Length: 291
Image (cartoon, rainbow, N blue to C red; front, side, top):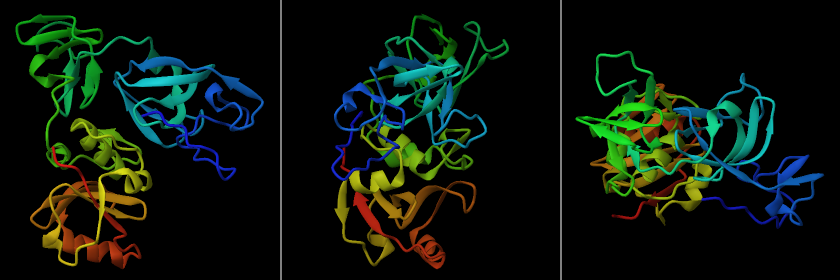
């Protein structure tokens, strides 16, 4: 998704609009007035994962995280930084330029939470690193149980073809149980609430924006908020101001939360009471489409 919102009120969402005070995408000429415009150069993330930040400062926290194989429309590269827009969800920000390279068509994606990269087709070598769940790669060759990619060799069972889409986004989220909470994160090293929902939805072939307020407007079908926690169905998405969770069914939900600094499953009733006690009652419930 790479959608430019129309400028109807004189303002725009800087998170998903490739415009700064001094530069904007050429497609925004006549919509947003800035001194310079630039055409996009489409590149690919070649690092295992890379933070996207709101400014070219490595000391800043993550706004979001892009994974190996994701495409980015780049409008400016200055020194060590590139500024552009992620093709997958339209998010705009700064990335280290070294994390980007030319596009190579992907054939497979990582379906394990993480998979080690080896210099050859065997386990008794020092790993070169790892690729996270959802990373996309091109398979070049196969040798016994291992496959060769441009980054190194991976255990073949940790990869799946791009067209293989699981039916249950909640099951994909449940794989992240116990993973640490990280603001802006989207990997098994750390993930936040909206990153978990987006990752689970994308794994199941559902388009999902990056942040919880965007998801609250876009995902599924809006429902009346049930009075009984047992009435929530698996796949319902629960929204509070600045937070989101997925219903697992049977009165439970899964979310990445700073409360425990991890991805947890808990009873919906208790969570509703605790979060409301912090001044944030449940605001919206939406139901994801069934496969």
